[in-house]
Image (tube, rainbow, N blue to C red; front, side, top):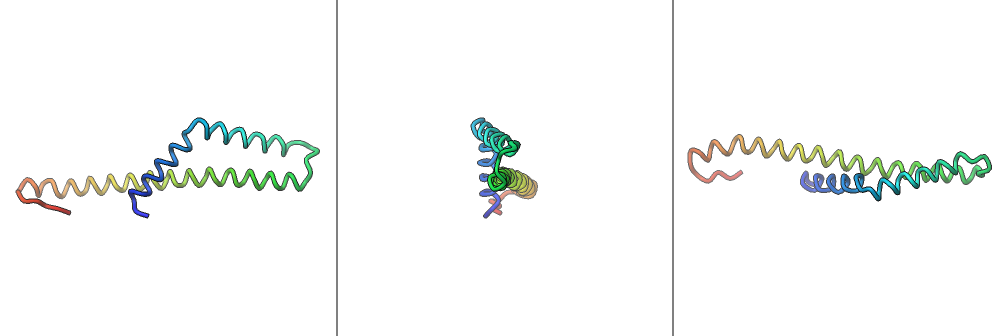
Length: 101
């Protein structure tokens, strides 16, 4: 996957993580799981299942956050390369010619 694709995926992840509906859903599901885990009469098997679901929920969010971070780094690298290219090519264009890199 190239840097542009990583940047786009990062932007998608940011939109998801920042979406009010996603935030609402995440909090609601997390609270429901934690509430049930706190009940004394919840069977051990059910608690084990809920812990697994809670870990999965957290891992899904971490994955989106990692995609966001990777996309941010890719965007910074794209900008760094573009800036470097401009620093090299623009002075050459002043001397004439069609410099392509």
